[in-house]
Each structure stands twice: as structure tokens, then as C-alpha cells.
Image (cartoon, rainbow, N blue to C red; front, side):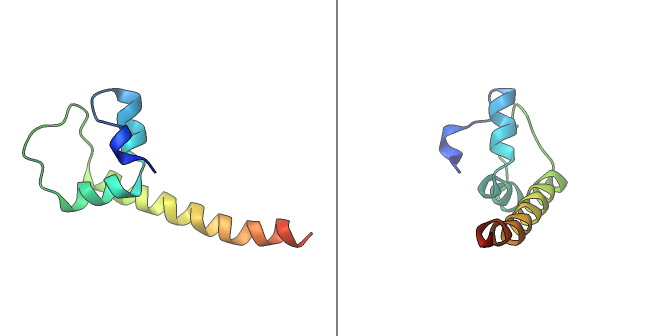
Length: 69
């Protein structure tokens, strides 16, 4: 989770940046004063949270099963 490393200037960097929970939080709470080169929606920020929650649930369920064997 390296938000300062990625920016919205390049497409690949913006995709990685937008997939991080911290940047999703910024998107939902911060008021942008200037237009971003690659903007994203509030719904996209909520999707980031949903994907991270599902990924955390899968890891929580699967890791103990692999460790017990």
C-alpha cells in the first residue's frame, strides 16, 4: 500500500492508485479542486472497498485451512 508512489498522471499508475483503500477513502471524503487527468467515480471507490472486503474474507477463511494440514 504505497499511495505516494502512484499518481493519476499515467493510466497504469492511476489504476493501481485507484485500487488502494486509502485512495478510495480520499475519493469519497476529499473535494477535488482541480480536474484529474484520469478521474474516477464514487461508485468506483465503493467497489474498491467491496473487493478488498471480499479478498480479506477469502484470505481469512482459506489461510487457516491450509495451515492446519
